[in-house]
Image 1 (cartoon, rainbow, N blue to C red):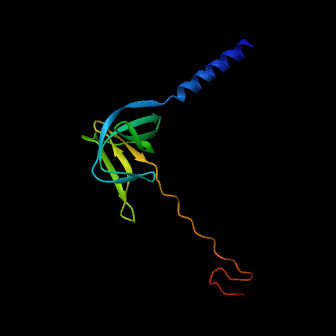
Image 2 (image 1 turned 60 degrees about the horizontal axis):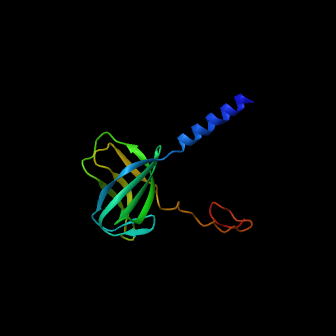
Image 3 (image 1 turned 30 degrees about the vertical axis):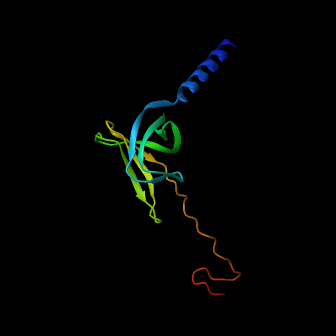
Length: 140
């Protein structure tokens, strides 16, 4: 009975430690132009970047004057060089807007690759007709 209690206690402690999130100190982050983050428009300007890391996963939050602006989830990716300044990599969308794809942090050889905001494209099911030949669309 004691063994079972000890094992259960150790298991709870390990689960609690592995679920701990590492909060990285906030840093200033400048955006040169308006971007979109998870559907939210973020105007150009100076922000505070707050990072919460869960192992390889990270949540990046942009704050301005202490107020929440936008948040994005991403993954830490190691690179061979240390970056000298904070940088935002953007994707130009078909409508001309720009979406955040990567955050490079000054003094770090890791970047945050932002999870894709776009859904996977889906094709509408093709209409089925009884007795149709699927290779050329003719009736049998």
